[in-house]
Every structure is written in structure tokens, then in C-alpha cells.
Image (tube, rainbow, N blue to C red):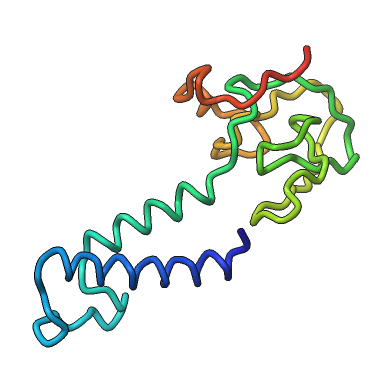
Length: 146
């Protein structure tokens, strides 16, 4: 789902959620609390629920919960998979098409072995920083061919 579609869906879901909460609480239109001018939301709980949902929707797929060692060449441009859907992990194969993800281009400073992230949650992408330790085997989608 593209970002602008996600935002539209967010506001539609927000409006429906607020109406449902008002109805469940027995609040008529005349009794409704004025909305917050900055967020447009009357209920902080609705805002948090939808904000968390949007964060989950934008999270990449865990391809594998361990890094992969690859030999990279100095000066060569590589495209790191950011969505986690590529069948050519850790590199992009355009499986992200139609999503909000796009590959990350990078060039190495020297030719050597590198450990690249496959959990897609590293704070130092494309390199592994140990973030994969928070994931279990149940979180991964596929185990890449060895």
C-alpha cells in the first residue's frame, strides 16, 4: 500500500473508530468532545491504536534472523533489499514493487567479506548490528539457500 493510500486509509479508519467509540459510550453528536486541532482526534486511544497499526504495516519482512556473509568488491554499486521479500537476499530482486519500500544503494570502501543484515531491522543497514537477536525462528519468512 503506497504512503498516500495508507494516509487516506488511516483517516477513514480513524473516523470510523471514533464514531464507533462514541456510539459504544452512548455519546450523541451534540455531546461529542471537540477534537484536538493538531491531530483531529478526540480519543487519544484511537490515535495510539492507529499509529501502532501504521508502524506495523510499514515494517519490513524478516527474511532470516541471522546475517549473511558476502564478499563485496570495492567501488561496485550494490542494491540492498529493504522489504525482506527478495528471493536473492540480501540483495534486491524488485519484489518490493507496489509497496512503500525501495532498495538501498551502497558502495563498499574496500574489497572484503561483510556481514549483511537479513532481518531488515538493523540500525546500520545494510550491515548487521545484532538487532536480529530480538527475533525468533517463528519471525522469519524463509531460510535462504546456503
